[in-house]
Length: 363
Image (tube, rainbow, N blue to C red; front, side, top):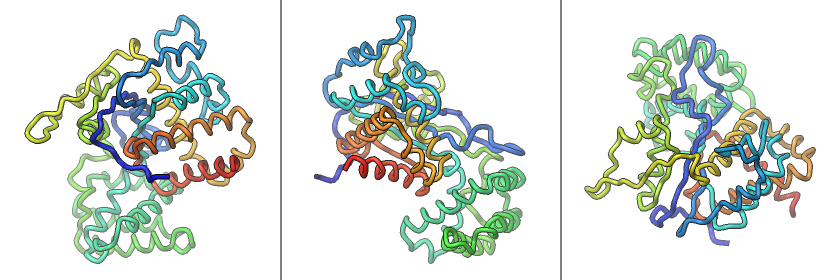
């Protein structure tokens, strides 16, 4: 089988909806303004060529006539594993699998995204570390992320008290010392030793220079100002394609603030539609909502819990998880660029684990 490749040049039609669009992510005195376990997910359906008819998909769901706009809650309720009990969800996923339809998404782990600048800021202070490849910095980011989840109250307190990510030059030393003190309980364990010890040594260089450049000169406590770059990303990457968004004022205002130029010409390849009158946007809501629930399940479950949970799933639940995995694989094989995740190794490998469990059981 050929390795999937990224195709940014063909003409595709992308439909979008999002889940967990909290607009802004910030730290307060004792918590964040929103759950750090919920990924921001933007995505939906995508097709190549002529627009397929998906009315039969919705007709087959046998929904009540008074529903004016179909959402995930109308076909599957509850947390991720509860959603997998839905027969309507199975009909939805199987229809996408059996027709010339694909899915796309960008999934952002908001806690991971909020702390990786600590590692990048430390690395730019170390010439030796700058020579190392991306896997080294990702290892450090992963260990810092895992530590942050274990010590979230200490991390929140540190971030709030130091006005992170707007550190002042005179507070760099104190920030680094307090951060590395959180390492103490974990640094000698096999799981954490390499990553945390490496990060501690690199941070010593930052202390000498009183500089952590990517977490200075920002706004106090604002970890993520907005998600605009995730709306812009597919528009300029898939510049020959058509991008159709749900008609939300917040999104149109974000995109109106930017002018995308390619070869001296402005790219105008996106539009807005009323989701009530567009089944593709409604189908995108269903899919993206499901991916959001999957991300929340992964972020809050250990590998051991996932293995245990999947051992006890019903046949209906297994059919649905298989259909979801097959749909993701089908889309990845069509175009690897359809799928985009900013996340830790920790969470990405749990998704791989789910793949492995199902592939093993189907073998």
